[in-house]
Structure formats: structure tokens, C-alpha cells
Image 1 (tube, rainbow, N blue to C red):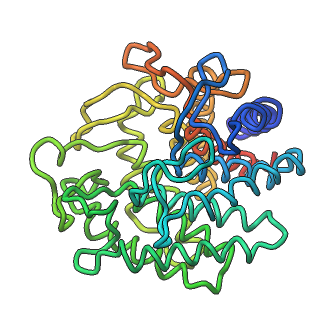
Image 2 (image 1 turned 90 degrees about the vertical axis):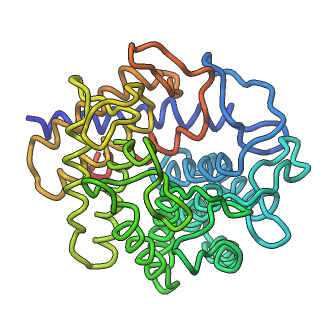
Length: 380
């Protein structure tokens, strides 16, 4: 029963993407300067903007690459993908080959040229996905390889592992951009299996095993000292269920691409994260390592990551309980976060009140990725 119910929801996800989300962001999501907008107002209209983040250009490029893969309006989707590739290969770049952080919306250049690993990871991820839909995919992978060379030369931390999150290197380290670097390397491996990207992904898996999950309970930590040791005070005890879920399906993807057995951490993180869901099945923003609530607010992205983790467990086991959990996460997204017009209420507090002041374009990456996973899993 739950599997058939989930298949109906997969069809609903396709309708929402094709009839609402992709049209809204294709028609209203770009400004006069030819860049993707930071977001839309809560009434789905455009707002004045002076600058936009590089990661938004990357995430929106990914969104329309997914639209092309799913079969939505090929000409419109490809136009948006090609727009994104031009930005990520040109305006977003510094002279040393790294990405900057913010771009002037009039297309005049970088407004903030600070290198940021999060922006860089999503640029790689976007280029990998774009290469799979653009006819000359090799021309898109070339700037990706140049960006990796720049990152290896300027950001690689050869003493402690991983990459500097920005320049100059910070004293507080973060797992989050490294998680997205793993995601990017896996996508690049799919696009170019002979490119050596799986080895780079393996290095990040090792960092996950030895540093990110070395704290109490072997859960995924968020921030660390410069040598990847546990931070002081409360920061060591606070974890994000959404990121526990996100690593679950990334570990599964790495397992499938590498041929290695699924890392046992996937089951541990999934069990912990599902144990912290609220009584209605919502993913909360922050909890402590003992499972107690630290911040009962919720974001759209956390519900999307829970959906993907449930789908991964369903594929792994075929058990109806995981289909039921996926149905719940989907319903929370549709009923509480997504709008019929193709947008989202991104941030809701513990009492159910809206905290969002606008619709950040960057949220679309999570929703589109999860819905594409749902559609493919259920062959809808």
C-alpha cells in the first residue's frame, strides 16, 4: 500500500516540477544582467538585487540540468543550463582559477572575490551535471578540471586533510562544504569515469570516517578546530539531522560507484536522525548528540534530505516502512513548505510560524534533487 501511495506522490512531484517550479524559476529567476537571481519575494515576484552569490548560479544551473534530464521543455532548459555554464566558466572566476563569492547583478564582474569552498563545490557539481546534457560535454568538463587544479594548488590542506573553507584559511573547520565536494566528485565521476575523481571522493570518505564522525556517538559533527579535532563547548554537542540524512544517501552513492560495501555509518546516522523527527515526521534544524532538541525550527532542505534518505533505505531493503516514511516527508514538503506556484516557504519556527522573508533560489537544488530521486526510484 505504501509503495503505491509513494508512486502516486512521485507523479505529483513530476507535475509540480513541470507545471510550477521549472516555469517559475525559468521565467522569473533571471535578472537583466543575465544572472540567476538570489530569490523571489513571498508573492513569487522579482525583487531589486545588486549582487548574487556564485553558489546560486551553480545551484540554478544544476536545477535546469535536472529539468533537461527529466524532459522539461528541452529548449528552455538548455538555454538556462548554457547561461549558467557561461557564468561559472567566466564571471564567477578569479584570475588564479578559483571561484569568487559574489557577482554584480549587472554582469560587470565579481563583487566579492573571496574564494569559498562551498561555492567551489557547487560550481563543480553544476558543471558535472551540465556536461551530461550539453552536446559537447567535454567543453564543460574542461573548466571543471581547471577549477580542481586551482583548488588542489591553493586550498588543499596537506597537513590536516580536506580543503581550506576559504582564503585566508579559517581556524574553524566545517564538514558541510566537504560533503558537497564529495557530491561534486561523485557527479564528475559519473560524467567522466576515467577522470580520477573517485580517488578524490575516497579521500573525503576517509576524512568523514576519521574526523567528521570521531565525536561522541560517532555522529556527524558540524564544526571543528583547525586540525579537525572536536570544538570546545556546546558546538561539540550540537548536530544537524538534515546533514545526517544527507550523508546517508551520499554514502550509498559512493558505495554504488566504487563497488565498495555500504559504509556502516549510513545505518547509524539514519537511525539517529529518524529518532529525532518530531511526532509528525518533520526534520528539525538542530539536536544534541543525546537526541534532545536544540532548535526545533525547520527548513525546506531538511525535509528534502530526509526524503532522499528514506528513498535510499527503500531501495536497499524494499520494506514498506521506508516507503511510508518517504510519503510522510513528501507530504510535509508539499503541505507546509512548497507553494502551488513553484516556490517555497524556506524557514518555519518551532511553533509553525513563517520566518522566511523571501524565497531563496538556492533552496531549489534540494527540492529538485529529492523529487528527481523520487521520480526515478518510483519510475514515474
